[in-house]
Length: 84
Image (cartoon, rainbow, N blue to C red; front, top):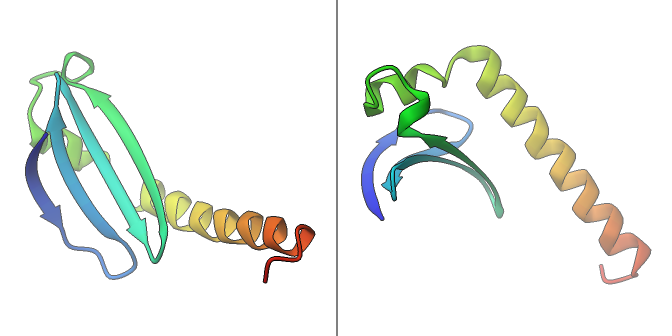
């Protein structure tokens, strides 16, 4: 796996990786992580610049909202099992 770039964002850590004919967009917020795999063949030129274009405001807003849903789901599971 090759590290391509760290992409600055105030709310999430974004890492762009390349591996096995795919780009991986890894978004992290605290202990939670979302990874999106994008095949080079699904892009026009197969470059990391195209992958960066996917990170528009709408995509990032949805991913950030998803982190809150993930946090809520995990806390609910802890609560059901009385682990916290």
